Amino acid sequence: MSEERRRAFISGNEATAEGGIAGGCRHFFGYPITPQNKIPEYMSEHLPLIGGVYLQAESEVAAINMVYGASAAGARVMTTSSSPGIALMQEGLSYMLGAELPAVLVNMVRGGPGLGNIAVAQSDYWLATRGAGHGDGRCITLTPYSVQELHDFTARAFEIADRYQNITMVLADAILASMMEPCELIPRREMDPPDRPYAVGPHDSAERERNIVNSLWVDFDVMEAVNLRNEERYARAAAEITDWDEFGSDDPQILLCAYGISARICESAVMRAEEAGVRMRLLRPKTVFPFPTQPIREWAERVDAVLVVELSMGQFVEDVRLAVEGRCPVDLLGRAGGNMPSVTDVVNRVREVATKAGVSVG
Amino acid sequence: MREELFMAGIGGQGVNLAGQLIGRAGMNLGLSVSWVPIYSPEVRGGSSTCTIVLTDGRVGSPTSERPTSMVLMDPKSVATFIGRVIEGGLVVINSSLVREAPPCDGCRVLMVPANDIAAEIGNARTVNMALLGAWAAGTDVMSVADVARALREMLPERHHVHMPDNEAALERGAEIARAAR
Image 1: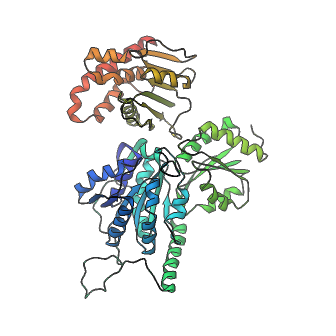
Image 2: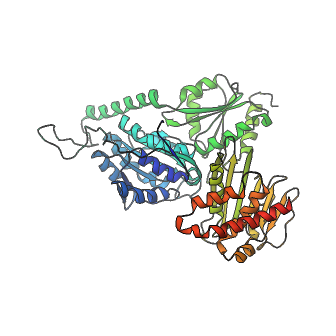
Image 3: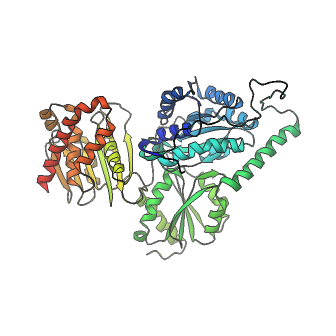
C-alpha cells in the first residue's frame, strides 16, 4: 500500500481490532471470552468515537444474530470470539449463509474440546473450514501467522466478505492474540457504505420492491439455487484469493506444511536445515478455505515426504492429504491442550520422516 | 544476531511491562521483534514469564527452548528456569530476593540488588528498571539510553515525572554489569 502507515508495537488482539476498523467495520457485537477480550475492549473504546456501534450481547447466540441483522441492513459488521463461543454461533452462521449475507468473524482458538483451557490450540480447523453450522455453506477462512497479518487480513476480510457475499473468518490462536510485534497500521479513512442492493431498510417504494432477507426456502429449486450460488462463490474464491507463502530450499527433500503459529515454529526449523542435514521447505497457507491444493500437489511430486505440524491431533493434515493424493508419504506432528512442539521437536521429526522415506540424512 | 531474552517473576513485579519495553526498544532499533507472555491465572502472586526475541533476521518461533539471556526476579523463578539458559548466556538475578547465586555452569550471573536500589532511589516501582539496566549493559543488543527512550514513549505523559527515578535505576543496574565485564 502506498499510503503512510504508522508503526506500533501492539498485541495481536489490538491489531485485529484496528484492522477491522481500517477495513470499514463500524458495528461490533460480541460476548467476552478469553483469550480475545482485548478486541471487544478496544472496540468499545474506539467505535463510539468514530460514529460506530459497540454492543456487548447477552450471549454469543445473541451476538451472531445481531451480526445477522446488521449485515441484512447493509452494515460492515464483525464479531470475535474463541472456540466455545464460536461453537455457540454455528446456527446463526448457517442462517447467514442461507441468507447470503457478508460478515467478518474472528476465532482466537483455545484448547478444547469442551470449555477446555485458555491456552494456544489449532483444534478448530474443522469448525472453521467445514463448520458454519448445518447445510452446505462454508466460511472463507484466512490464517494469519503474525500480528501484522492479523491486522492486514482482518481489514481485507471485509472486502472479501462483500465480494463473495459470504462470512469470512480470521482463524488464529491464543498466542497470536496475546503476543506483541511491530505492526504497520493501515490508516483509518471514511468509507462509503458497502454496495448491497439486497439490504433491507428505508427506501422509496416507487424506486424498488421491498427487500426480504430470509434463509427459509420451502421450494426445492429455490433452495437448490442458494446452494448453487454459494458453490459458484467458492469456485470463484478458489480462483481469485487462494493464498500461501513458501520459505526454504528450492530443492527440498521434505516439505513442511503448517499454518498460523505452527508455521512460525516450522520457519525456525527451516532455518536449522543445515544442522538437521535435510533440505526443507515450508509451505504455509494464508487461506485454508479456499485451500492451496495446487502448490502442495506440485511439491508432492518433487519431495520425498511431507510433514504437517499442527496444534491438533489431525485436522489440517486431512486437507494436505487430499492435496497430495498419495503422491508421497504425509506424516503428522500434532500437539494439543496448550502444548506446542519445540523447534527441536520439529527438526527431529523431519529427520525421522526423511529417514523413513529413504533420504540419506546428513 | 539473535537474542532470546526470557524474563520471569511474581505477578505484580512488572515482568511483562519490562519485557514489552525491551520489545519496543528493539523495534526502535529496526530489529525484528516479538514478545510473548505466559502467565498463570492468578492476577497477583502467580508466576509470570515472557519471552522476547530480537533479531536482524526472521523471528520465526516467538518462544525459546534455550534463551540466550534471562532476567529472573524471585527465588522460585531462579530455581525453575536458570537451567534453560544457553552456555555462556547472561542471567540477571534480583539479589535482594535471591541471596545466593545458584550454581550455573558456563553462564554469566549478575547479582543485582534491585529492591534495595529501588528503595534507595525512593521509588519501589523501579525494581524492574535496575534489572533491565544490568541486562542492557551486560549484552550488546541495545544501550541503557535505548531502554529509557522506549520507556518515555510507553509511559503516559502524566507519569513522565517518574522518568528520572527510572533512569537512575537503569544506570545503577548498568554500573553493576559494567563492573563485572
